Amino acid sequence: MKKAVTFGEIMLRLKSPAHERLFQSPLLEATFGGGEANVAASLCNFGIPAKFVTVLPDNDIGDACAGELRRFGVDTSAILRKEGRLGIYFLETGSNQRASNVIYDREGSLISVVKPGDIDWREVLADADWFHITGITPALSQSAADASLEAVKTANSMGLTVSCDLNFRAKLWKYGKTAPEVMRELFRYVHAGIANEEDCQKSLGIMSDAHADSVTKGELDASAYEALSNRVMAEFPNLRYLAVTLRESRSADINNWAACLNDGKNFCLSKKYELTDIVDRVGGGDSFGAGLIYGLKTYDGPQKALEFAVAASCLKHTIAGDINRVKVAEVEKLMGGDGSGRVTR
Image (cartoon, rainbow, N blue to C red; front, side):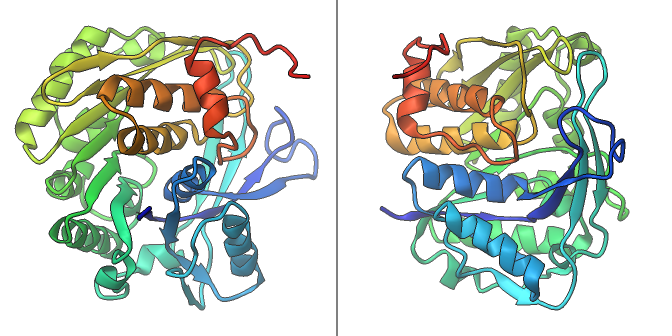
């Protein structure tokens, strides 16, 4: 089976224990995470070989990070090692009406100074049939945006399927370009797009018919996203699929979770899951992306691929850390309707 290749930044994740405020106690939980790395690890858990491309510092922190990826079976052979720093993010997990909070410390990280020509994409992609990226890496710097565009262009020219999770991050677009200025060009080379309730507007400049306050009020109208997905696919004819995750946030602990998928012929809406005791929602979108890639590569028809992606992401909300640690059988069990949580003996 050919590999899926993902490209982006992996960071050191420093989280306060349980639901504590940052530095409430003198402890932080240290792990690693980042959108594209999370996707690669999930794909390996699903039995899809995956390679992750990034730049890591040539020191003990970089060694630990690469070792953590290899523990999931991720191919790290294309990771560049240089002198410099690994980006960091601090996470405070919310509860009830107190939202979770992320603080970035990633300016000047090695991936932010990567530039076209640093990575031999034809060599990296030679054994792959799928390439995945997000809108996070192009948000870091102009050079990272240029390298991202080089990657998707090369993947296209080599006949790979290209997926992109738009992943708009307001805290990152600081180098003088707006997200639509960069992402509209990159998205022309994408075959499978992934977005949430706001991404199409803020990353592509395409407005939704949904009410502007629907996200914060926790109520989403799926019909508005059918119209939105039709609009996006009309503007980007290279797209074969556009998936939109539909998160209704009642509080930090209680969400409704579903998604829709447009393949240009059919508009599919998934089952809705009620998430009533969220352990960790960071990485939920990445687990959806990995599930969708697995589903599109494995199942016949878009509906089953969508249901797999939503169920996989539903289970991620029960797992601490960035990475989804579930297998295909667990996801398919939930898809089949077994969400009782009964002890398996």
